[in-house]
Amino acid sequence: MSSPVLNVHRLKTAFATDDGEVTVVNDIDFHVNAGEVLGIVGESGCGKSVTSLSVMGLLPANGKVHGDIVFKGENLARASDQKMRSIRGNEIAMIFQEPMTSLNPVFTIGSQLIEALKIHKKMSKKQAQQLAIAKLKEVGLPRAEELMKDFPHQLSGGMRQRVMIAMAMMCSPQLLIADEPTTALDVTIQAQILELMTKLNSETDTAIMMITHDLGVVAEMCQRVVVMYAGKIVEEADVVSLFKNPKHPYTVGLIRSVPDMRGKKERLYSIPGNVPKPGSIQTGCQFAPRCEHAMERCFQETPELTSLAEAQKVRCWLYVESKGEGAVDRTIS
Ligand code: SF4
Image (cartoon, rainbow, N blue to C red; front, side):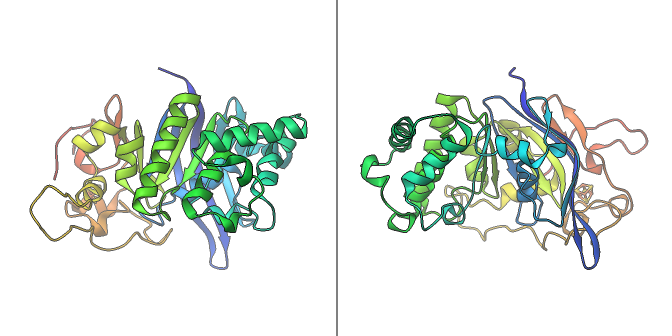
């Protein structure tokens, strides 16, 4: 098994607000192995994006990180701004849902691609240009030489996302964080972008942390999955176990919400209720108000993440023996 390129331990991210400190990511542990694709899944407001911004050191000024974010032996949670600037876009790259938020509209594609190389690699302008053209070709963009002179608004959404992937891959990062990279794209373009990312992952061995609400993306790309709910990890499993034998009622609900094109025409399931506001539930399981398996204990005590099998962990009282602390496996629907 390959070793972790990123190790996150007891990460807690909180924001100072007028109403006091609000914890959005609450004591999570996970790792990303070299070369693997890890999915981080959950509805909006579960803390997935804040987790990725914490890793990148891109939180707004009122955000604060506690815990350890260890990347290649360096604890990013305590790294200086200068150190983070040398890692971002170089050893760790990120792509976002909407490429226009990252591309500067007043600079050409070429100058923006070359910028990353000028910052992180000692390279002549000519070498940088050649590499930029090669990367644009690698991500499947036609007429790469002319594209270097184009401005972002001259490209379609799918092309812009390909440019973003090319830009992210310019410095051959060890870790690529992709935050909902296909959500803003048409379905056919989504499939092409996922295929491209899978190809880059297998060809370059870059690990990918895929932040998504879309279980289709997870099934397509990921080897392991972390399911987040209300700032906590509620289930962690390899992708086959997660889909074949989901344990947490939230994971079961997410999977039931995916339309089944082969089945009878039934009303599409949706998990009742909404993700609670951070800090609004102080006691018990955060999912209890929405859970059809909730018991009295669920509203009073907070379950811990429990190992059921080597690669599967779940945070739910259904899997804890009532008297002792041992784990008990079962199947729910
Ligand atoms: S701990 Fe209770 S409320 Fe929470 S997911 Fe499990 S059964 Fe549902």
